[in-house]
Length: 342
Image 1 (cartoon, rainbow, N blue to C red):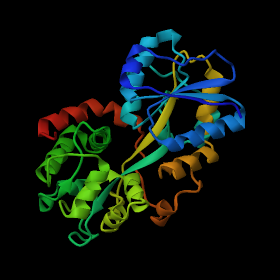
Image 2: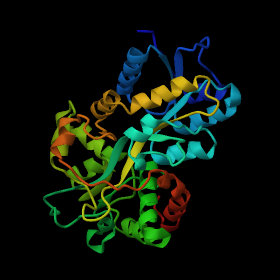
Image 3: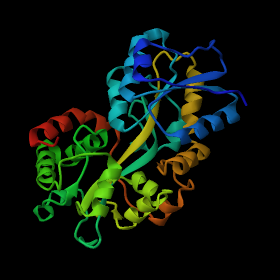
Image 4: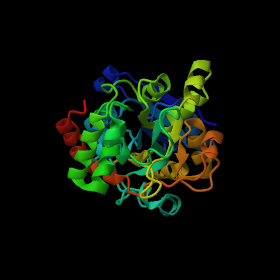
């Protein structure tokens, strides 16, 4: 197996334009990745083992990587950009980062909802924005949907992250798609009215807020809960066991899902290798790595998943094309500002 090169740069290095110190080779692919999971190394190793193509990694914040690619222009060594959340992929698309990709493999393997309509980027893993609740305070039959989070009966009971969090922006973007801007704003105002505290912390903090009794309801991506359940820290496991997970809107559109995704960069120096890498991410092997490494749901049916995820059984997910989450992002941000969701 060829040696892989991984470069994790701080902001100063990214802005200064530090680059891969490599000689161009036909047997390599350069990945700019905003995914910060060590488990992704297994993806790169497996791809190299299967194809013999060396993977060079540059890691950084999504917006920083977008600006770097723009600054590098036609001289950019980037072949593929990977990140999380359709909102961030949309930002890259708006900056004209991605090339259109036509691939029979991706068209066949990936559900339509996981593919940009013009092939500019693709979703390879699914993240469910779930509701978590205190079963001693709220019955399983008392809440069934995201819409319920805005119900007056849950005043002072909701923990959720700030409005600058891309996960919440995409959730509100989905509400715009289903209810229109006015309906989504009414919902957002209702959630603000039900805050148990001002938004603070990450997704894990929202779940822990329910466990500690600070709130009875929280919103978080599902894999943060799995991390707590599987933590080496007994306190984390004990906290998670006090909380129940709920997949909303099973009686209508299904639970909101977002993605970990990627696209080929315009002007990629190794376009064939870039497409091969994207197609590899849709393979059963790569899908299993996504599911095992970060407890994400695969986008391909029939792939083996984490035992905790499997224990939840089948549930319905929203089949809204994820590109809409990006398109509605500016409206979502404006709504958050108007309702005072800080």
